[in-house]
Amino acid sequence: MRISELSAASRVPIPTIKYYLREGLLPPGEQISATRAVYGEPHLRRLRLIRALLEVGRLPLTTIHKVIEAVEDEQLGVHEMLGVAHYALAAEVEPGDPDDEEWRAAREQADTLVEEYGLRLSPQAPTRDELAQVLVTLARLGVPASADDLRPYAEAARRLAAEHEMSRIPVTGPRDAAVEALVIYTVLYGRAFDVLRRMAQESASAFAAEAGS
Image 1: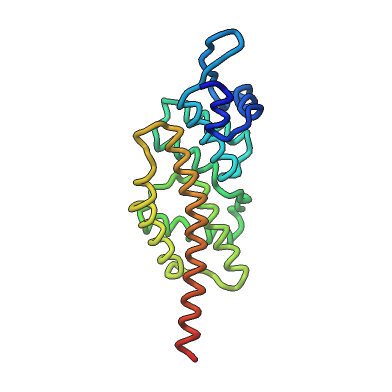
Image 2: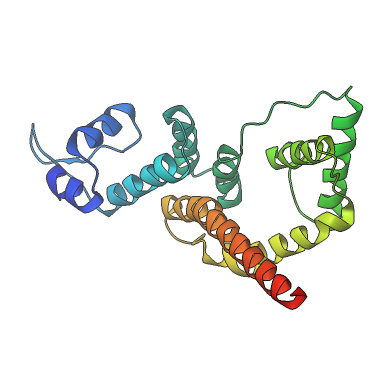
């Protein structure tokens, strides 16, 4: 397809496609003349991935470059490639001070939960620090979270990821498609889950109010 057709199919403006080509985010098309190139399904897939990273993941272009490099590095296994994307989506968390007793206790609690549920996470996984930061904030608000408080959330998350989400990521297909699916399930379905949980809370509150009246 010509660049105009690629633009129409992807809904990405031609100037933006040309910018991605210059920046190396999109591979060159096949040159059929000095001034014309044609593009195929891999280019369309790559544009979908870039849009997902930009619009859904809200990632800066410098980070998107790193994800694209992982996608193109065939030496990286699928698990490692998805790990690069997953870590890119992690929230910005200020590094904890290992000399701070509150932070150290929260990080140990997060690590204990990881071990209890047999979660296979890298020691450097940013999600460990994310969870520790949440625990610190809860403690400072006067509502510290115990292991019993966290277990229902950990169990629901483990079951949802293992039994539903990961089975829908096409790990045996094109690498671009696998990362795009990961971004969508991590971010958009994460938001959907949060909305559904708040709906359920409102409903449970209404039932409780009705029962008490």
